[in-house]
Length: 277
Image (cartoon, rainbow, N blue to C red):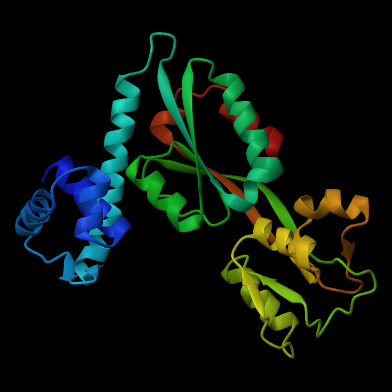
């Protein structure tokens, strides 16, 4: 297995075709075919079903795809770190849940940035599963997340408890049976609490996995939905959003997960955790 084979496989997956992959990589189609056959032969599995209209992942190909992505990205990082100019000593990779970047995520990153003057930075947006996977493979050094699953050589720092509040764009909007209600999926625990509180509620017409995107939708189209209080605060002050009277609030915890090997050199980390907690 070599890097060219991995990149060719990922190009086929991205473009959905061996022909388009050859165009993307600027190589012949026969080279693409040869690389794919070599990779499949080495793994002993068929990774792609080829047909006239393109190529589709097999079950084995779907499993292999995430490893190919990690190996390709590790190689990119290795090239970046070994090519650093003399003024820089390391690369700091920070992962952040998309809903946590506004406010808290940006604040933590700014703190890290100020304490890493001789580092290059990469910021990775992702969900809980992606952040866990990137931490486990060493692609990121720290992650700001809602649902950590620490393994060996990782430490979980509990920072704060976030309040989820029902907001609406229309003052006086009812707590129940709002036809413009947007369900914001804030994780399994929130889902259980939400179901218990609204046993008689209809299925929401619109669901978002991101509170940031849900907020944008509400501001553009109107309606109501549960949002992190910190995210809605500026719009509440401006009168764009309003709290829904008598609606129950929910909570979820926020964590910073760090790679112990990388964090051993972060003398500033304990003070940062104390300040953010």
